[in-house]
Image 1 (cartoon, one colour):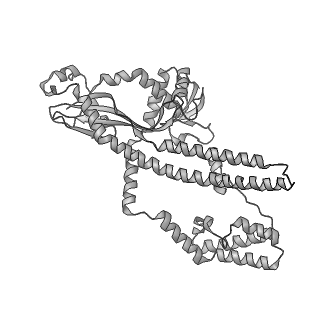
Image 2 (cartoon, rainbow, N blue to C red; image 1 turned 180 degrees about the vertical axis):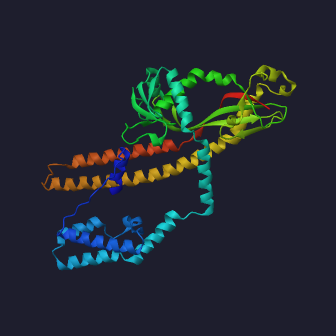
Length: 432
């Protein structure tokens, strides 16, 4: 409960030091038990170097929770034998050997990883960092594209902006493609780096990053209007290539969807990735990772244009069939890898979600089932409850059962992952 309360404080942007007091009245029966508990806790903390808080939630008082212990103290604390038993229970619960065993169990269960798992996690983190769009790229693109769409944005503090007007086409596009929070007509502040979202003494900013509805809508409209420019292609120069034959680089979009539906009735896309396939003069195709065009430069003034390069004998192998070759290579080599990566990550998360939902809702359903029967018996005996009757309790149980079934169906649809065919967005000529 303490973690939940501080979690809420953290999420609303609290920046000052917070204190939370849990009050128990002194010189009361439950106060005596709580005081004894704190004394033992301090001793255990000193003996175990502060680690006792790591397993505090696992401590059991002879099979009972602290709440049950305090209730016993309130109800029966006047009885000497009960007070003696409660004192003994608290002392046994914080025995150093017992706490040390809990710490060892926790280490074995959660903290120990074999070398292969450490290596795998490290590689995943490296790949994620390499793929991550840097905030200044997102900022530069968004500001230019948003102004082209008729948006009004002004810088108010360094790299923090106010949007006074979001054009209607952007808001309307979000209604078609969005499935989360809506796009607002205006934003007091937006920022593209987490560190600039809530600086001291300044208004809280919306964090515009990949996945934010405003950015998604701007990207979707920009692609709709300017996608043909990608198909026209370009010429870049690879200064590290000392050969004479050019290469062709295709960029393709690949998406994976589940069986959930968006507002427009289309299946929801859960992962989308830009793929790069390069083909050389020997007709060898290979997949390149992470924006290879950043290693190339545009044509300088005086260098041959695209028409002149394509007219040379070294470029005679370049034809329209290369596009289908690049697409076939992506289907055979890259799509299975993308699907396996998303499936492993998504299904593991859905397994945990399903177990947690089942556990929580089943407990609530069982409680209200029992409560409905209990109230029914009371009503038959002429002891009706003025606040709650058996019909209302039964209705709550039925509503929870329907909610459980709905969540299970949603999770089932989320498990149904299917890859779409990769789509060639465009290409470019890489000159040596």
